[in-house]
Length: 89
Image 1 (cartoon, one colour):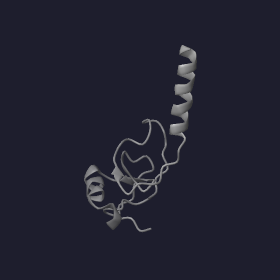
Image 2: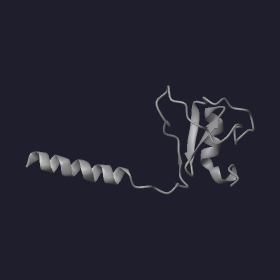
Image 3: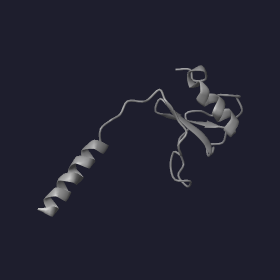
Image 4: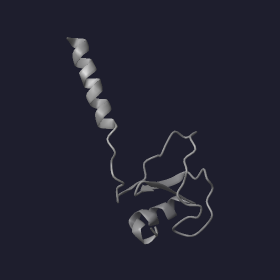
């Protein structure tokens, strides 16, 4: 019985994780991946100041399902205040 309950719980958790979630208009500055992982950025220039950024930018933010890189934390903080002003769709 215990195995049945564990198996059922596993199936439910896998089903919940596989649901597609729509891209959010909210900005997240949580780390994208492990420090050694390479993440594809949505931009080549900092949207706040226009400076070129490296593909391994450490300052990043998530917005509408994309990851944006920044040259510095201060530029990222400016973007987070009003991302729609910087992102042209």
